[in-house]
View 1 (cartoon, rainbow over the protein chains, first blue to last red):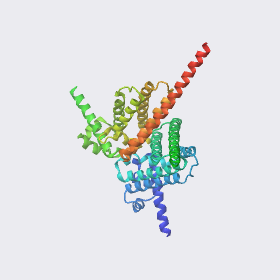
View 2: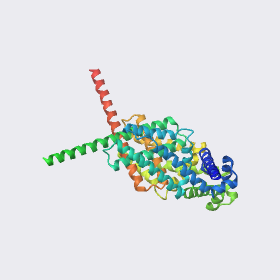
View 3: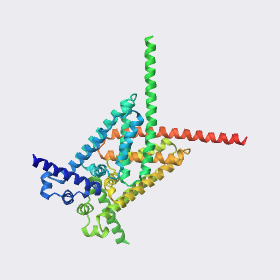
View 4: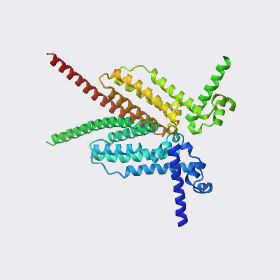
Length: 215
Length: 215
């Protein structure tokens, strides 16, 4: 029992050390030598827990996506469209925090995932799960929108966030990024309101039609 | 003269071979050994042209950004807002073409650039130049918008494109990507029309005010 929990501790410290290396120096800087040094484990210790460096990378990517997903999941259900966008904005701006190692490390996987089906699968599942949470949140505050309209908005936001995070790591200044987001938020809200009005009007028209038919 | 042009040819073939490797296998697959094999040059030949592999990577990145920039520059001035978005759309969808080695290789640089100031600078300059071209194009077809409004639209489009291209390389299916873009395009057009109407109205109001004052 004791040895088991100590083994778990070693495994976790290896994964944590890998995250630090990837976040600070990039994925290609993650070598067995650096990992042994950073995690203060022996070579035998490392290979006891992970047969290959690819296995370390996969476990790191799984952990990173789960960490971010938990954060997104743990937020309260927003009570209005405005609150929904505040929530999305808050979570986006957290990515721009200099001490956010998880997002930094996650970004390190982006380019490398273009050539690795396993990683693509993990990242896509992660994005799908976030989209699903956002969809449910938006549905409750914009109940008149169709599923297609809701999904279009959620996916537009997701694409935009990926783009803004990428630009952040290309050293785009924060003031500009905040401006770009603010403009996009305003744009999406305008579109959302337009859709809501149209949906409500068509619902009313249908109700009037049914009343007329009943008479 | 002859030897000079033959040297240039070797240099170009090294760079071209590097692009193929990065596009097909990722940036971390670019080793001296693979490059020598792919370019059919000797080790001496490679190091005669490039002192380090980092020098190869920088020249590749410079060439890739110049190639894409030339394409964007060479397009005709669109005659309407609709034509402007058609142009942007056409150039975006070109990125989704399976045989587009330039974009594939460029994407390979994304994650790695987060830890390399020189590469960040090249990519940011590239994005700034594209934004400038788009700004000029949009200004001509939406002359009533302020510089700030034009820039907001251009930067929103740029962020979105980066996000969509990233999602493409994470194996998002093309039909979905086209839908996301279509939704965003519609959204931006709605916002643009709203801005245009407001700007025109305020211009008219000012003109009326001036007439009243003159009377």
